[in-house]
Length: 168
Image (cartoon, helix red, strand yellow):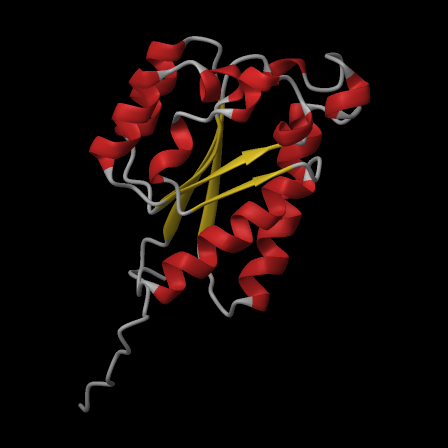
């Protein structure tokens, strides 16, 4: 029996795992400052992202992408979650930890997992302290200001990076 050649971009049978990690206060989506964050809930965001992932995987000609959603208001639990899986990539919205957590920055640097940082609001148009991101230093990219579409754009960027790097 003749064995078929596998291309370098072939994915393992187990598929690819992408963590969508939402940090502090993102459980309040739909309630907290809807003029800034919109009226969609975290559950609405998850549904939107599952649809977006299906569209993007078809567009990028990849398959077997599994999104796992996680949200925590406890920084220690959040940091552990980033470490506990075998993520091929992470879509990350740390919330306020973006501007305050050296621990998050150090964890992301140590893990070396490809990630894209996303934010719903336009950080550049907000308070001065929100213009500094500790977590962006090792990100493949940062997307903000497009509401829930920031997540879709961020996922596209992450999948494109993984594909170009030969990880998809």
